Image (cartoon, rainbow, N blue to C red):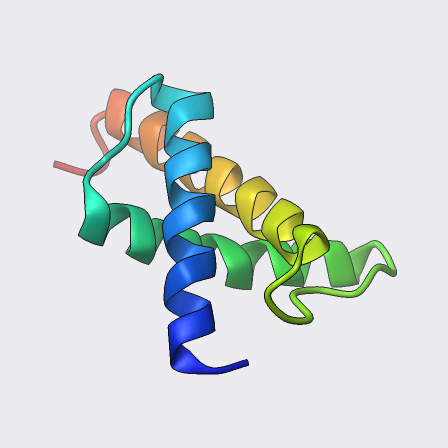
Length: 86
């Protein structure tokens, strides 16, 4: 997958993940970063359950990235509420 495809997938997945968890977007750069990290995390999680990870710029990969972004945001908020991350 090209760098531009990762950026586009990251932006869309990060925005959707932010909307699901926070009801707001985080901003373009944070959404891209969140989406790319979410794609990696989602790909890892899906592969642990025997499913393929991110395979390109398609709806399945978007679903994987959104699931990963939601997991990353959920973990981040859980740690921040406990005061472990400042």
